[in-house]
Image (cartoon, rainbow, N blue to C red; front, side):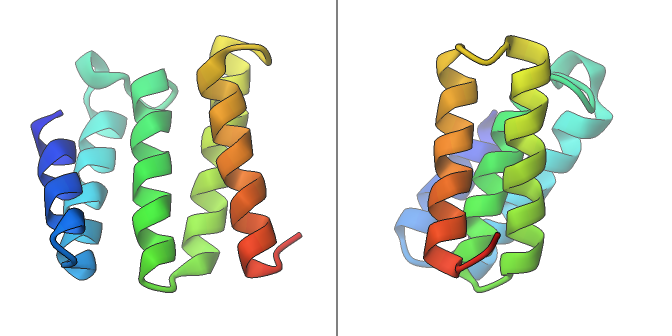
Length: 103
C-alpha cells in the first residue's frame, strides 16, 4: 500500500519513469505475497491497473494493454460482472483501447 501511494505521489510530481518502477514493485509485491492478494486477489488486479496506467504514460502500450485486460478479466472472475471495481477496470481497458487504437 505504501509503495503504491509513493508511486502516485511521484507520478503527480511528473516523474513518470520513477513512478513506473514504484508501481511495478507494488504490483510484484501483491502477486508474490498472499497477504496482499496473491496472483488472483482483487488488490493485485488494482495494482495491475495502476501499473498499466503508468506504463501507458511512458508509451509502453503493449505491456499496458495486457495488464489492463488481465486486471479487468481477473476482477470479473473474482468479484463478478456487476462489482464497481470490475466495471471500472473494464472502462479503463476500453478507454485505453480507444486512446491507443488497440483492438
